[in-house]
Image 1 (cartoon, rainbow, N blue to C red):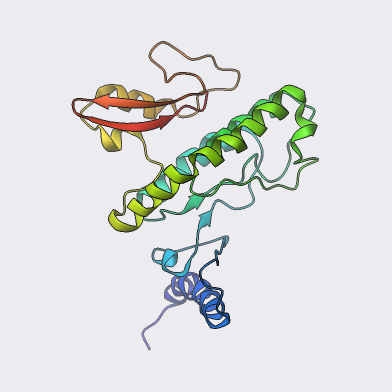
Image 2 (image 1 turned 30 degrees about the vertical axis):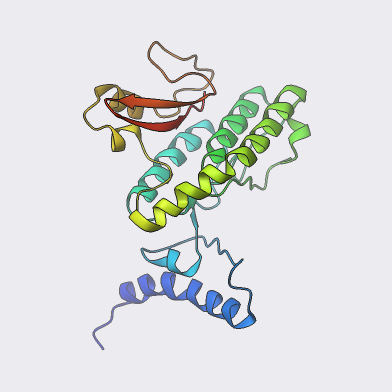
Length: 220
């Protein structure tokens, strides 16, 4: 037939979610169906599928890598992309270092197409992360609710134009050198304080260049 195992593997990632979506359609429940597989291929979103970055570690380094992975995936056609908030394995809810990592991870997920926390850690319940962080995490959930209409509208633009919800500032402002500096900073370092010229800590704001502006969420 001329097909290789590589061809079959690529086709599987598209046809597997289609199998489930077809089943949901036959049951009359296709409007609310959403699939979250561990692997994917270009075209899978046609079948109500969102990609995620799998069962990952819970270190700050993995958080930094997850941001790059998520941005790269969205820019290359996986518009519905999310991550394991807090990482999946490891992570000590009583460790100050991990509490910061988990909080900043959840700040990231607040802005993604799907906000989720997922992990086989000692605890995923917010109250185990200390009173102060518990309140911060609750505020993030409430913020996500407030942003819902905006995110839905932006995802509608994704469907029409292919422009991803999450993208580096240099995507919208390639002519502005400040945006390239911000893109290189990523999530910074653990216990990092904002340097001069960085995005406002923990805020939502507009970045404007000329007559164009766009929303920015700071993870600090």
